[in-house]
Image (cartoon, rainbow, N blue to C red; front, side, top):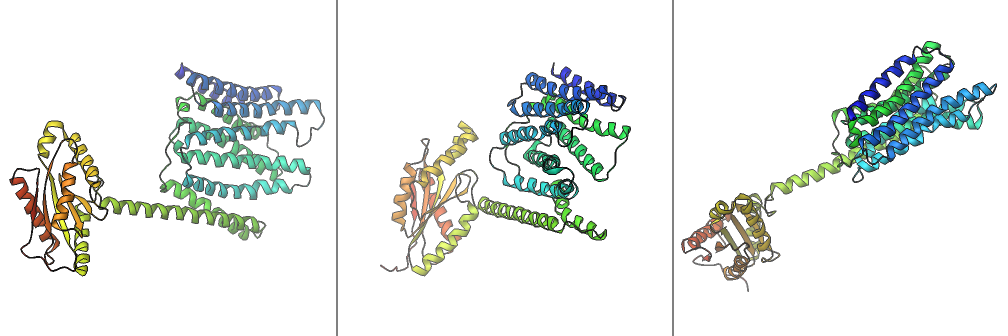
Amino acid sequence: MGDRLMRTNIVVAVVMVAGFLAVPDGSTLQMAWQVACGWFAAAMIVVGVRRRGVTPAAPWWLFALGVAGNASGILVEWVLTHTQTDPGFPSWADAAYLSLYPAAAGGLLLMIRRRTIQRDWSSIVDATTLTTGMGLLAWVFMIKPAAADPSIGLAGHIVSVAYPLGDVVLLAMTVRLLLSGSGHNMSFRLLSAALICFLAGDGTWALINQMVWEPGPGAHKVLADVFLSGYLLFGVAAAHPDARSLARAVAPRPIRISRPLLLALTAASLIGPGLLIVQALTHRVTDVLSIAVGCGALFLLVVTRMSQLLTQLDVQTEKARELAVTDELTGLPNRRAWNTELPRALERVRRGNRALTVAVIDVDHFKRFNDAYGHPAGDRLLKEAAAAWQEQVRTVDHLARYGGEEFVLLLPEATAEQAREIVDRMRLATPLGQTFSAGIAEWDGAETSDELTARADGALYEAKKAGRNRIAVSTPAELLTRKP
């Protein structure tokens, strides 16, 4: 049924768009054909949403309402034209035409809120940048000329400005939805194509009005066909299977800028200077203030985006630094961090003539445990052991994973005997019924970090040789005299 619905929509849309070109211009049939296209599209939105089980359906109901309202404007205008000598501008037909904009904007807003799990500031800045550039174009070529026409009165100015302003708002929301990761959704592409049809149609009419040119029957039909295509694309978008996933929540996109987006942002940022250059070359610099304000806004948006990128770069750099010195499995410092920390600790205690002890710890029979229970269980043992041991050491102690099932512990200001008590508490806290062997070496005040670690490792070997599940201490023959 779903495939038949999609095929039906496409066939009817093609027939209605192509057939409209054969309808006599200015005839009642032409008006009825246009209204039928809009109402059919609105009905197909309702049918498509129900057949596809699209949730939430509220955005699509708003799209259907906007399409039906806009198409009804054609009927209202025809009635006014045939019942009044001059309906004037604006008329009730404009109210119907304009109903598309708040309805479609409301639908897009609901989709954006539904798809966004958390506020995505990078997408907001990018969408605002693109919209500001397009808005500047709309202001110079559409909004300002419409607002400056002295022959239409206040209400006429408001309605004339409402059309291009509505287009800019819809463009902003479409870009925002695109940046949320909707670009690969076919239903979104069809929806975007529908909105682009209305944007293109309104823009063309604005240019025609400025040129004081009345299009002939052929041009009028083609231009009207653009709006009909917009109606019918709404219906096809609702009938497409992707409509079900268009409003699903998605994770925020990466803060980095893709090449196509960078190109679009660059083009938007150059719109202001480009307009100024064109006006200067034609000796008609009439929008200096508008262009200056637009350029200032674009500059601030670019600076904001750069700040976001720099902040993200700092975060990623810090994360990379942490990953470089952190064991991925246990979350403890890794061997690289240990090789950095031990020489520093030796230098600190050397200056203060204080004690320092190192312990090397090895989980007993870890290979046997892995073979019996599997590697996932072995990983869990190491993670739980690291967490349990961390609770037994002092705040100043430094526990690290040296490699495999071997760990090292740095105990500043602790003698071998004090270190033995701490390490024994750790041994008793080892989870899953497992044990470890450990070797302890107190620094003699002269040996290097490698020599100290090697001596502790030698003591570990002695503990394992003596039967495992025990602690062996390696004490140098003579210790330097320490201050009391």
